[in-house]
Image (tube, rainbow, N blue to C red; front, side):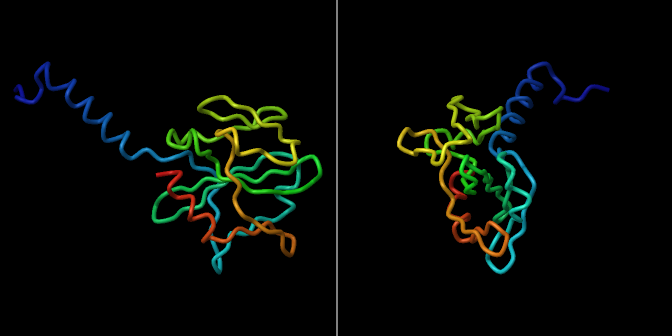
Length: 152
């Protein structure tokens, strides 16, 4: 028995529709998801004070907001959105490669040892306000939720 929808011309239409539906629901990568408690995300300093980049995901209304924590050459910890104002719309974020962090969209590199990553060149991770308290790096949910537009 043949079905009318199984004609040669129908299969390409299905493929195009599937590609459209999948691209509309695109979300950034998922990393270790961190829950909030009392309006804060808390990460133990012992988990992130190793000179490497640590990627995390916070979920807001089903949307992923990715961020990273890194230690610079002076031992100072800082948090950044896993996005920049130039390449964020591609939702590819950054990756750690050797002594650098690299944009997955435009391949711009930033040295992990640098004290500060300058945001004036367009593609650089966006600083995420955080504080150190009682052995944790603490990020208020109100600050991270402002970044939801970078991942939508």
